[in-house]
Image 1 (cartoon, rainbow, N blue to C red):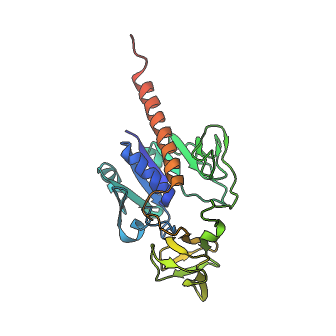
Image 2: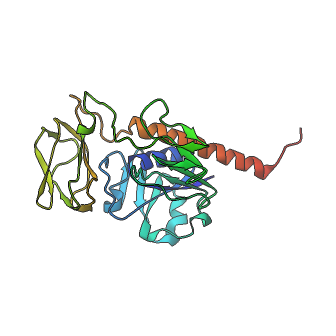
Image 3: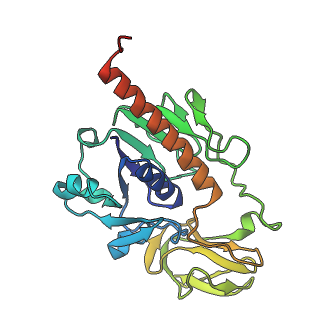
Length: 275
C-alpha cells in the first residue's frame, strides 16, 4: 500500500485525494493555514476552518498533532489534513509519493525531486526530471491529463475554457490584498454588476449573470489577484459539489502513475519468478 502526501486542498488536490483513496492508497493532504480556494463545495477546503469536511464519500479531518498522523492515515474512509505548521519535516519517513496540486499558475515550481520516492507535479511550468519525476498536464485541450515523463507542461495562458460564450468573465479576482467579506453562498444567483462583497473599502461585484459555483470563504486575508468567485453562466446550475472534468482527468492520471509505481516496486521487491 502506497502512502501519498498531496500539497493543495483545492478542487484538484481533493480530486486526486479521492482517486488515490478509492484505489486503496493511504493519503494525507497539506496546505498553508487559511487556504483561499473558491471551489469549496468540490474540495476539502472548508476542513481547514471547520475541522472536518465530507466530500465524495470521504471525510477530511484536520490533524494538529504529527504523532497522530500514522493512526489517522490508517483510518478507512477519512483523509488527514495537515496544515503546513503541523507537517512533519521529514516527509520521506512516512510518505512514498508527493503530489504538488497547489496549481500555482504564475509561480515557478521549486525542485521537489528526492523528497519522496516518487514526486508528481501538476500545473504549468513543471518540468519532468527537474521539478518532479512525473508531470501531469493540467491545461484544457486534447492533452489534459497527459502523463509527462520527459519535458515540461504547457505554460499558463490565462485563458479559461469557454462556457456559454464567457471565458475570463466567469471569474472575479481580488482587486487588492486584504480581508474578503461576503454574505453570499455557493449556489446563489447573481446579476452582472451586483455587489457581492468587498475587500477593505473596495467592492467586489459579479462580472456576469449566473450561479455562484465557487466563492472564497469570508473573513480571510487574500492576495491581490486571488480568484474570489467562480460564476456558472448556464441557465441550469450544475451541482457545485461535483468533481469537474479537469480535476477528474488529472486525478485519473495521477492514480495511474501511482498504481504503476506501486506495482513496479512490488515486482522489484519480490524479484523474478521461476516458471
